[in-house]
Image (cartoon, rainbow, N blue to C red; front, side):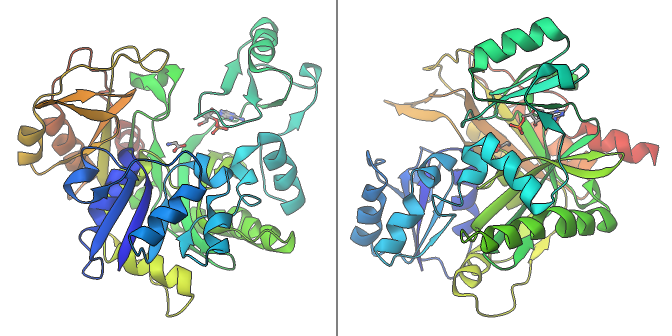
Length: 406
Ligand code: AMP
Ligand code: GLY
């Protein structure tokens, strides 16, 4: 099987890394890919329009395409591939509205009866803190938690007229991701992202500073509740509305005292959750993907063996104004510890590897226990250097804290 991976971040590197281990995968092409992916795949520049990906798929005789980021999905890459009778995993443009528009999503949750934060049109309907969200795609940066009326009003000014105002939910945040063929959904292991820039969940929101995967994040009762109240109703409602959801469905959840509530759906895999998921997965991931496409065979989940941890190394100035061009050293030493350094924003510059975006690397390791996985990941992180490197020291600690209490 020949696979095309659309994208060029840490999530796509993790997918390429896992798929390269599948006996059935003969070749991987990535567009645009990155220097890490280039060690495993043929990288071709990203085309200007989504139609260009279909041309790449044909030129390389690709059997199956998977899409990392949301932008090409929202731009209709899946519809384009269907028109050319090419196999692809992802939602159509119509189904991608679940992520592309927060207003659409809120109305969808109501139609599907999916529990979510109460939302309204006016600040008068809420106490503080209150949550203000921009309507369109914003890479996790379009959400402001306002502590008082003044902050809320300036957030509304900043984010523009199309905003969602909703109640602030308290609880543990969990990423619940599965793959769907439009009728059923195969859930993956639960993960937790760390969205704030600084330790102890301080500082601004980012695209994600690290993630870990551990089956204990949810009890089996909680996972069952999430499937019954959130994932399956979403799949059912999408089908009923004539826009069946195919591809990776990612629920950003708040585990509140009243049970799981949806913060948002993403129509793709999470980044950096995927780095932790792929590291922990034992099985043939290409097989999971192709069974989803063909709808044949019993789709087994493979095994999410032991905990894994991904620590994101970010550039100076991230998230507001990341600096690029800093020389990166120490990846071979980091990988000699047994960890994998997934490339997110790197670029070759002569003989050097340099920073090329806000999130630079996702250093990922496993372990028999979460504690061990954390230790292994940070031992590898210590080997890597670039000027201005920022990272959180506490990835996975919220899991350790919770389980030491129970
Ligand atoms: P979203 O893009 O909707 O996932 O929001 C980004 C982040 O803002 C989430 O990961 C949460 O940490 C936080 N957030 C969003 N909505 C709420 C809410 N209603 N209550 C509390 N925190 C929220
Ligand atoms: N880790 C958050 C996201 O992928 O949206």
